[in-house]
Image 1 (cartoon, protein in one colour):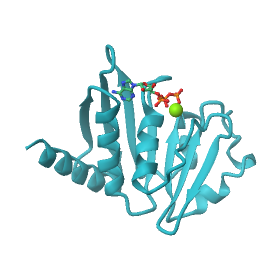
Image 2 (cartoon, protein in one colour; image 1 turned 60 degrees about the vertical axis):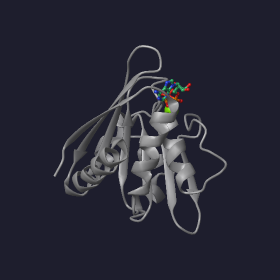
Image 3 (cartoon, protein in one colour; image 1 turned 90 degrees about the horizontal axis):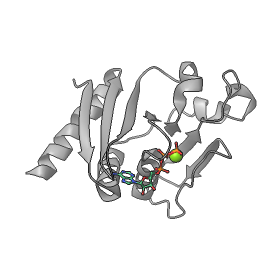
Image 4 (cartoon, protein in one colour; image 1 turned 180 degrees about the horizontal axis):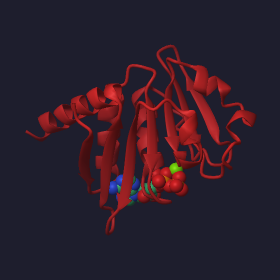
Length: 162
Ligand SMILES: Nc1ncnc2c1ncn2[C@@H]1O[C@H](COP(=O)(O)OP(=O)(O)OP(=O)(O)O)[C@@H](O)[C@H]1O
Ligand SMILES: [Mg+2]
């Protein structure tokens, strides 16, 4: 089972490609963290995942609403951006639904203030800014389920390269 994987992206298309491959492996109930500085490409990844599931009206930055829900007959996505969250605020902001929905897919930008509220099994993605449009996208699987997911993602990406 894989714990780490690094993908080098040279532009938005490559980052979106990666995120859509990841989306194609999601079955419901996964927790994905997105870390990295402002403007790195976290929301670019979230948008690509949402597009994969057929959400045409793409998630904008969730910063001002903290959490947005996208639901269709296949899936419920929760997109949260906790950049402005004070620690301990989680339960005053209507996050119960997101935390209790075992079949929902949670996409969390800036998770630091609330890491303890989420199940420990999660896939962490850190987008590292390089020069220009280059990004280093570093995955870390915390837990068995995320490890299996990361395994499958690697296989899928390596297959595409051939
Ligand atoms: N390789 C790349 N991958 C992703 N985005 C890229 C890449 N190269 C350039 N960009 C640009 O970087 C920006 C990333 O913006 P995005 O909103 O996804 O950042 P973010 O990490 O969500 O920031 P914030 O912390 O403010 O939410 C976009 O303008 C995008 O066009
Ligand atoms: Mg963002």
